[in-house]
Image 1 (tube, one colour):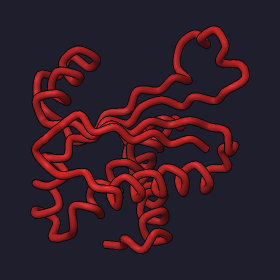
Image 2 (image 1 turned 90 degrees about the horizontal axis):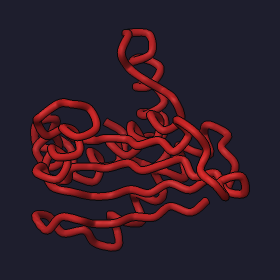
Image 3 (image 1 turned 120 degrees about the vertical axis):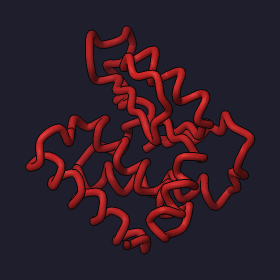
Length: 152
């Protein structure tokens, strides 16, 4: 299950531990959802300015956010995609994760893990527009974080 992690920001250090944690979170979400081992996900760490541009361009919302998901399962299949299951990209604003970790009183790693789990669940079709769906997502996110030793 290939998990690619890229860092496109320079405001916060991204060390091997954060990269490994991101990979474990993706792998745990996919395993808990029964997604085949050959599925591919990319995690990209960015700053607020970068994620605001994406948010404006793809969602029409001109402000930064904490996480965006770009699914490759939506729309028409790409040529050659029959052999691979490319789920998509999860883009995380590390400055937003840092602010939220301070607000919620937990570590940056825990907040980044939460945002990654949230983003991967979106790639798999989960949403939180209505309360019932939101509760399902929250339970799944927390179960993954607990399993990885990052509970609230």
